[in-house]
Image (cartoon, rainbow, N blue to C red; front, side):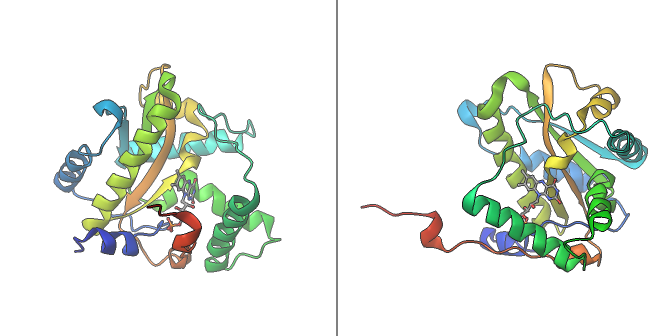
Length: 221
Ligand SMILES: Cc1cc2nc3c(=O)[nH]c(=O)nc-3n(C[C@H](O)[C@H](O)[C@H](O)COP(=O)(O)O)c2cc1C
């Protein structure tokens, strides 16, 4: 079990293949209680997290897949269709290549890429999925806080030997999820996360790189 933040950050990666065995509920209670220590603007704590496991996990997954297969297209409740430019586009491309490379999927093999994409809505086989929701009126103020919350949660999970993957994909087909989980209209699904114990799925071999310090951080004095 890792306890130093730098080690947690080094060890964490987005896991996209999981064993089916669930995390014990008392451990989930402990981790999710600790996650509430995350900082937020004016301590507003705008996150409202819906965790699905067991039958509800399967029901929600099937409902999202049905929506995907219906061909209706995504209907996210927040602005998610930014078209990346310049270095952001390059990094987006790099992360996709790293993932498909790990899975041995060729760039031109569209059916295989679609199938890999579809695993998002099966929680990548994880026994648990989380939906990060917040009041829609909060906009970017809430989104910043919920992002900080999710990172806090992912590190706590890692500390307890549990892997995770944050997923914008889990906010792309909110209709049936909101019905099943009784999420009111005023609240939207910003994004989600699959988590559990990683297995030896090829996708879990994927590792992404980071830019040099000088490219991301400037020190002034
Ligand atoms: C807000 C957010 C949304 C993401 N959405 C997805 C997603 O829908 N599907 C997916 O497979 N990975 C998703 N990821 C994982 C990123 O691709 C991943 O964090 C990035 O490539 C860096 O790799 P690493 O997490 O393994 O370090 C998301 C990550 C974040 C932070």
